[in-house]
Amino acid sequence: MYAVEVEDLVKRYGRLEAVKGISFRFREGTIYGLIGPNGAGKSTTLRILATLLEPTSGEARIFGYSVRKDKHKIRGIIGYLPEEAGGYKYLTGYEYLEMNAKIYSPDNYREVLEYGAMLTGLGDRLEDRIGSYSKGMIRRLLLARALMHRPRLAILDEPTAGLDVVHATQIRNMIKDMVREGITILLSSHNMLEVQFLCDELSLISNGVIVAQGRPDDILDETDTDNLEDAFMRLVSHG
Ligand code: ATP
Image (cartoon, rainbow, N blue to C red; front, side, top):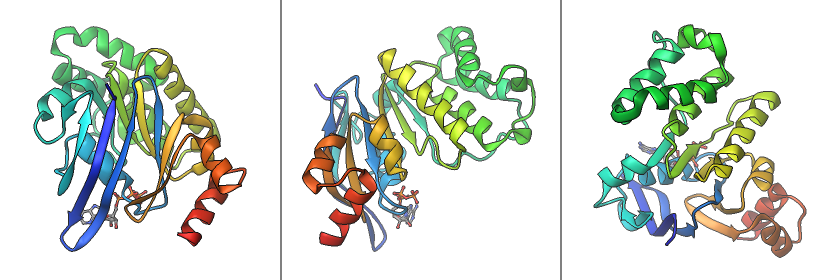
């Protein structure tokens, strides 16, 4: 069985077709990347997989469950990191994790909360209000929230966006640790070089269409380039 299976997925917002019939799939234990420039349709695809948005047509399955018919089941086995997360700035980081643990893991919330607090790496700063956090601290908090209940699949929208090299590296290491613990990861990024080193397989997306798919090394071979940025530019200018 595939961890994620997307078939001919389409999403229209009014007259704008943001996702134009994309298909990809990957197995459990993988780090899979959706890579492409701003507006390519990555967030739209991830929100459909997280069951927050209805597809216009096509189908997507998470561990065999349909995003159309089995939303409740899917919500129980995924963790989702949104691209933007507003609100909650008056809560402390700890209160934010506690609230989420109580909502999503009522049966073992203390254990989930302590694990989440550890994952943030924020130490005593968890007692401070989120409003006082740096961008990197907020990203770590939200990532911990998405991972603390040890989902089967973590869907991470731009996990390192806007972070400096130190914080981006910490997040990448956290993602790799999670895979070692058996969590499957689907992430999006417009940082093609980062993805080249992080992902086992990926789809390069441009304007709602997949322009290349496969293992990073195979895409480099096929395009006769030595990095994904050049591969992408070559594919888009020829396509
Ligand atoms: P970015 O990295 O900039 O977030 P993305 O690849 O995640 O880009 P999406 O956010 O999925 O791309 O957007 C794809 C297209 O759909 C864009 O043209 C965007 O303006 C449009 N779009 C996204 N959400 C909506 C919405 N709720 N209503 C209308 N158009 C939308």
